[in-house]
Image (tube, rainbow, N blue to C red):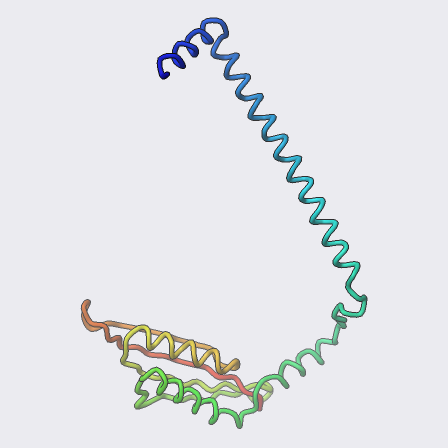
Length: 180
């Protein structure tokens, strides 16, 4: 069978040049691409019609109404959305609950309060030394940031005492923003 195909191939090459065979192959490939793109165009048109029908079927009043607020009102709305300064104790309790949940010890912390006289927001920074494995530190930080939308991680520094140690010496600094 193999020799029969080879013989057929050699006879074809003697009668027709290899360039002619290459040209026929390229023409067949181009025809295949043309058929394929036409099928894609038909599918695209079908999807467009379905989307237009879906949009037409939706009631007109479901679209959200966007109104432009003056800049001063936008700033006031933003400031009003920030928790009041009285929430700082509750937020720190959440930090310590998260530490307990992930079996971290926070024996000491450094706390700094910062506010400017003419600004409506104040910040409270808490820095904690942590000694734990990477997974616990990562989960603790993620838990705090998920639970407190007014918190940001200002610093996360980690060091390992030796290459084979799984315990990291870390410093985690959170900044909490409050409305005065």
